[in-house]
Length: 403
Image 1 (cartoon, rainbow, N blue to C red):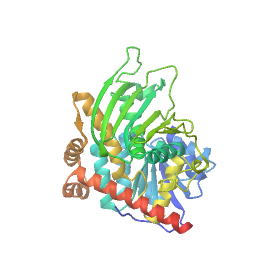
Image 2: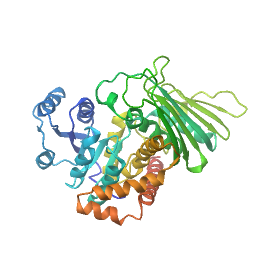
Image 3: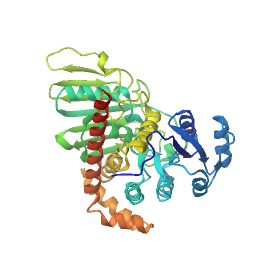
C-alpha cells in the first residue's frame, strides 16, 4: 500500500509511547539517531516518562500520560509504540487516525483480529505502520539467506531453541508463553530466510514436569510453506544446560547442499560433494537485495533506520503491517493447532480472525474497510507480496543508481 511520506532529507519527529524497560531502550536509540528528533515521551506513569527523559539528557522534553494531548502538543511524524501488547491496538489505531505513522514493537497487537484492524486502519489513514521484528535484522541471518539461495531450492528448514530464562512476572503466568512471546522471532526469520509463506501447521505444546511456567513452555511445530518447503520448530523455555543462542540453532537443507547457523557465529554451508565453505569477504555485510542492505545497524536500530527510509522514499519496508501479519498468523495458527490437536490451514485462521475483527470493530471507517476486503487471506497475501516485490525492486534500482 502507498502511504504519506516526508521530505527526502527531513528528520523524523518521533513521540515514544512507553517508558518501561523496552521503551527506555527505544528512547535511547531515537535520541542517538541522526535520522530522528525525539519530541516527547508518553507513559501512564508520568514519573517514569520524566526519568527516561532525564536519563537521555533531555529533562525539558515534553512528557505526559495522554496520547492525543501529546500528539497535539508535539506534532510528530511518527509514534514509537513500545508499550505492552494488550494496548498496541489502541495506541496504534489512535495514532494512525490522528494522521501519525507508527513503528511498533512486536507483536502487532494482542490478537490476530486486532492486527487485521490495524492493517485496515493503516489503509484508511494512508499512514505507514511497521513492526520492529528486530531479530530479522541480523547480518548473520542475511548471510545464511544468501548461502541458502546459492544452494538451490530449499526443501527443509529447522530451528532448535532451548533456554531456561527465569523472567518472573507475566510471562510465567501466560497460557502460551513460548509461542506467544518468543516463537514469532523464529517464524518471521523463517519467512525471510526461505522467501516462502505459511500455508498450514501441525503443532503440539507441552510442559516439562520441572517447568516453572503455568502455561506450556515447550512446543514442536511443523509448517507447510509455499513452494513445498517444510519448516520445523522445536523449542523450550524450560531447558537448562547447553543452551542455544537466543536466535536459535538453524539448519537449511537445499537441492545442492546444506547451510547451518548456530545463531551467534558466522553461518557455514557445504555444497553437495564438497567441503564446508567458510564465510568470505563478500559476506561481511548484508547481501545486495536484502531489505537491510546499506545499513550497518541490527535489531531495533535497524528497524528505526528502515522506517525513516520508508517515510522518506515511500518504499514499503520489511515489517510493514500487512507483511508482518503473515508472521503473526503463524503464531496464532500454531496455538489453534495445539489446542485442537489437528493440522490447521493458515488461511482459515485469517478468515476467522477477520470475522472476529468485524464483530469487535467500533470505528466506522475501519469497519467499512474490513467489510470491503474480498477476504483476509487475499488482502494480506496480495499486499505482502506487492510490498516485498516493490521493496526489492526499488532497493536494487537504488543500488544500481549508486554505482
